[in-house]
Image 1 (cartoon, rainbow, N blue to C red):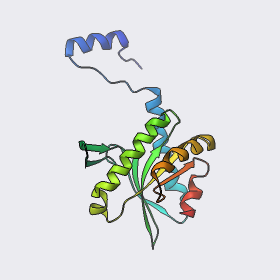
Image 2 (cartoon, helix red, strand yellow):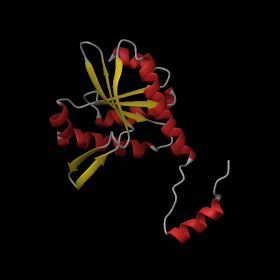
Image 3 (cartoon, one colour):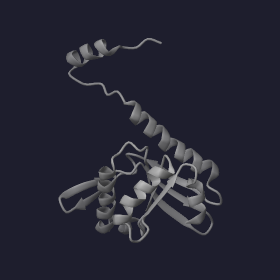
Image 4 (tube, rainbow, N blue to C red):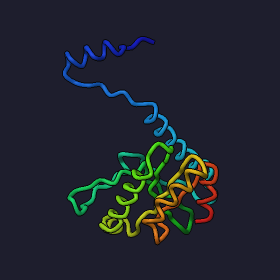
Length: 170
């Protein structure tokens, strides 16, 4: 297969006046991991079925924050259900590439969105936030940060290995 190389792309950018976006390996890994979570939930969520999955940007939510319009950017929004219950979740796939201060900022966004009341007005409930991360060490670090913002159990942290157990317990 032939394609334009870096030098040709630069020349094309100059001649067409636009940049061509090339996804990074981190972006690709993260995107594939989000897709993997959806596949795993579809095939093995126990008694619950994945009835809806909205990846980003469809999962993003606009709201009015104290500093003006804001956007909450979860990696996904999903609904798990059986005959008697429907669980709504925002999905965060953590590849351990974000700093803990960045996680703290994200948790503050969830808190601000919760306080805006917008999701509750549209849906009747506020989805919990399901953080899937790479290992127990990172899960413990995430819990330490998220517990600062989470007196009500809004955030659930799990690793890929124990994620499906979480659906059975909650």
